[in-house]
Amino acid sequence: ILLRCFALGWADLKPLAVLTVAYVHQRVCLGSYGCDGIVKVTADIIRTIRDPEKPNTLEELDVVTESCVQVDEIGEEEYLVVIRFTPTVPHCSLATLIGLCLRIKLQRCLPFRHKLEIYISEGTHSTEEDINKQINDKERVAAAMENPNLREIVEQCVTEPD
Image (cartoon, rainbow, N blue to C red; front, side):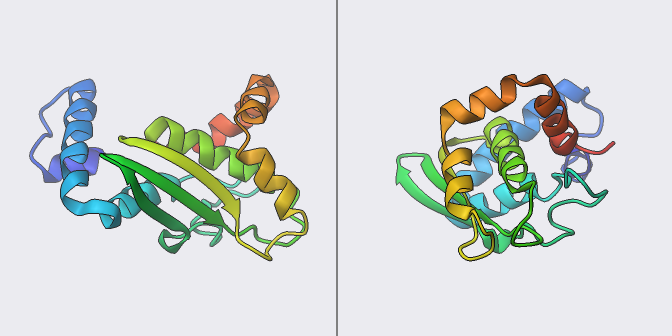
């Protein structure tokens, strides 16, 4: 965000003001870009999530790309955001955790009203149906985030690098 702020001439603002102005600017831009712009914003948000096991981002590992994001308008200024991610191996034991990280980061960062659905890309994981149910169940997500160890891992994965 800071690089965008410098480019937009907001470098002299305090950090909180920068975030506020950037948020308002992003909201204004979303309306003019439509679903394609929202795809780009969403892809920007998820590209920096780190893998729970490796020092790489999910984008660097090709777990998420801009093409895995689909956006449809479902109401006035309300969007359905669908993410289809691809685990690195068909038996990835951390696929549920990756889905949880995607959900938490997007819930926190998407600057518009939305419904969020996250799925494993079809045919890319041995238990994709079960995992898809877990990561799209609000109660299971809430229960997972109550676990302090799991919450700490999610926070490490979704926190932006300095």
